[in-house]
Length: 376
Image (cartoon, rainbow, N blue to C red; front, side, top):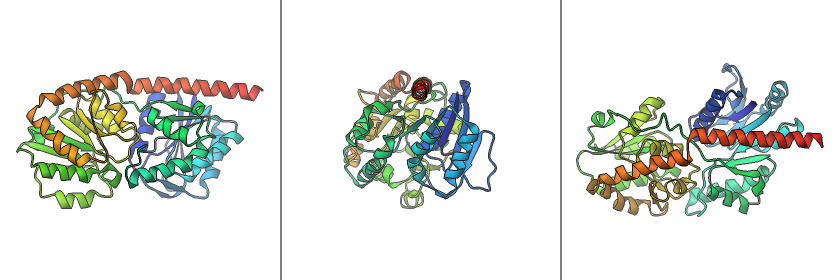
């Protein structure tokens, strides 16, 4: 099958990682991938890559140049893929895709993994709700919309997106790569017990509340908090909390083997986000057998439900962390028990293999529907 994948390669964010994991897995299963993404015109494209010009690009949204649509259409006409799969990236081009693909008689699938909180408890979740409202009319014109959870389905249904077009295929992680194993990270950091946040340092990730709770608790010597990642709040947070020797700022880590080693040596993973889609960092930690605390936003609360982790109320993160983190000091076996259940949950529901099998089935279904439609 020839799939034209429209996604992101930079800057690094969940969308980028999702696209890389899925397209690599599809290629390993014999599918041909033509990867469309926004890149500077001075860059040299790799084989099977189409670079779309842009004015501005960030982890949040992208502004394509006036030529981007023309480049996209001409490439699709030349390549003649069987199907287009768009990993939507908050770009005006997202709204043009249904019309473009309809004109070319190419079926169109989208992954809509924008973060959300269905309870709208803060400014971040209210802003994301507005984004969903803006996208909903356009999503109704895609052949299928892939989302990550039943909670997200409910949000889109209420906005008028037909349930027949929505398919729940959760994020997946390679549980053979992300698995328990040896690690030297505790020795490197001088840690007896290691707590971890991994992700962007941005307002919607709510990391500052975690840092405040950590400082309030005055954790015993040997108990360390590692922060992996960077972002717009990185400099300010590091400056304010740099005096605390129990907090280690490891920055952005691109090396996957190093990230896995850190996860394997972690006792407790904390994700205090105000909005989420379905966090790959959370799934990776769970797959490595780490006890996880995550807020009940996006699909994350669903992932850690029923004992596979601990769910935090996004409006009460500070107070709940102040109560829960000391439990892992008094009862270290608690983390081991939850971590074991976390890995079981991933292997049952959130493996990359399961994800790809469901995706292939969806492609075949959409292509058959397109074939029948063209015959009529």
